[in-house]
Length: 146
Image (tube, rainbow, N blue to C red; front, side, top):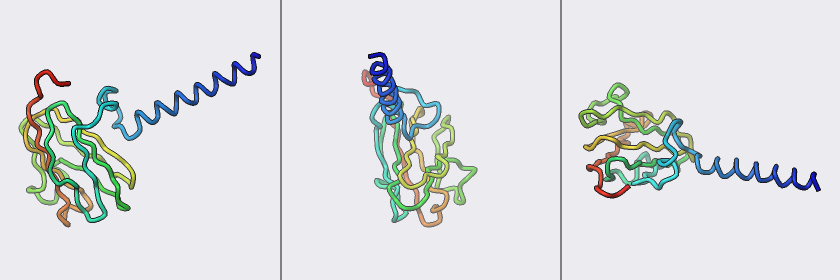
């Protein structure tokens, strides 16, 4: 009887780890659990045609945008003027910090939570020259909505 109880506990532990892994898969290190578990304000696909689809999205302060690399290529999501080949490919509102996903292999995701309202222009480092540029417009937080 004790062996069966141990087996059940072991399986329950494995199941718990699988569930936690699924919840936190693709989450940026250090992201708040609530942000990871909640649905993003917008989802953008990174494509084989060297495009962000949709090219522009609108969210509110406190919402996340999730980029999903559904292509066969490595992409980045970069809003850092120091990394841009062309200054027009990146824009950050006053007070916003630059961000960079690093290399996103096929199937990878990246989430960024926007804390400053304004217009963000971002690009893919390896495909910036091909015009792989996108935009996120961040509106002030919605009152009474979490």
